[in-house]
Image 1 (cartoon, rainbow over the protein chains, first blue to last red):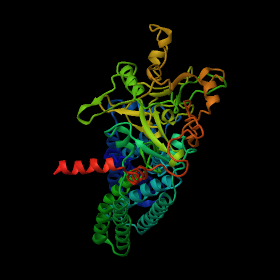
Image 2: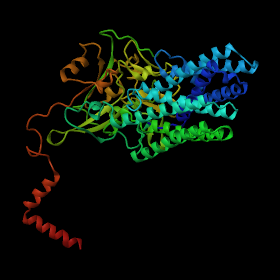
Image 3: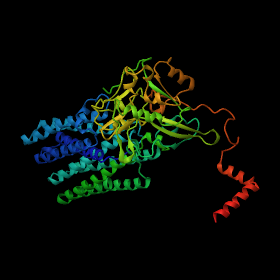
Image 4: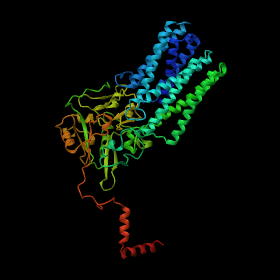
Length: 315
Length: 254
């Protein structure tokens, strides 16, 4: 599948934004750390900005962005529509929580209730984003049990990393939150490795034989393509990446998204003050680059069954 | 609404039956489809001149199946199959994609399509093509503006691809009615659906190439036909006349 920059930015930025809202919502509901107004006034606008950048970016993928509002109507069947609705609904509690902190130095029970609603709505939104991909039976690398855990774990990991960094930067560094980053990061790593193993060892059940129905004659090969130039289908669905390049990018994302940031988080746990904050800022920068590579690969390594009509042996 | 209409037994299911035995791969269906639809329901179908690329609802592939004597070269027209359970419709976030209750035709409302391309990702058959010029998704309409057009003589009220096919390889009708001509044809010839394993229940059917009659194939009865063998055989039985010609050729080429 063609890795469109708009969709990569959308899924990674909004994933991190909603991940941050999940953890901050929980912190707001269950921990005294959130009692700091400064933290709230940094975390909530940052999370909402990330989410907004992601959603705006996604509209660049549309042929008719001015009609984007219509996407809220088909929640009965469409995961994309559900995602759109959930993302907008989440603005409600998150915005109100921010408003509460703006007007009051101690919102009290309001912070608990709004924090919980924000956390749940954000989690549901990440789930919907993942389901857009996981519901497409045409793409084996997306329609599998690993995709939802991957999206959830990566959203939660990037959100936790952002929260830990902000807490350290504002002098509220917490070993508890840092440990959450470690756990979420390891979970995301395990999910990603499992996903890569799955797509390396399994293939889509369809074949050129089932696509053409000519399998009873024998193996089916493309003899002549319908056209001499590339068409939309080949550009959008036929994007492939050489195995050796994919391997290189996988190593890069393992290093930038997982290994280096997790070591830096460990350093932050062992040190404190400025050193810890600096380590985490570097970790955020590395993880941001790493997650973009990871998401690019998620598209580039996905093979659509329509390529079977164009000469692919398997999808 | 992108919720699918409930399909009752005997309900009208308009679709195509494509005969892979008689298709000659002339692309006339693709060209006449473009001709009609460029000014029809989904028109214009943009062409992008810089790239020799554009929106087409019909694409004619050619495949080789099998090896040796039993192998076949098969022309294979590919277009929307108007599935009974089209994922392209259910994934649509705006309701622009829909399946008509009355005849099962899958259409796109160009006025509400936002061009998110998700339907083209959901379709395994490559039936949807994005019109970059218009910013919307387009697809085969089964010539909905032709088959019901009362300004046309009744004989012309068939999809453009069917009307034009010089080999009569394309048939149009109601596949929901077991007594219709197309349903009979499918039953007679063992018509099949593409990628049934995905469960989208396509309405269109393909008729397989007829089995070859015994002994009618050219070449030897055993093993593969090889041009190299033919050349080798020929050189072994070469006559003096051929040697003379080759000598003359060598002399004249000096």
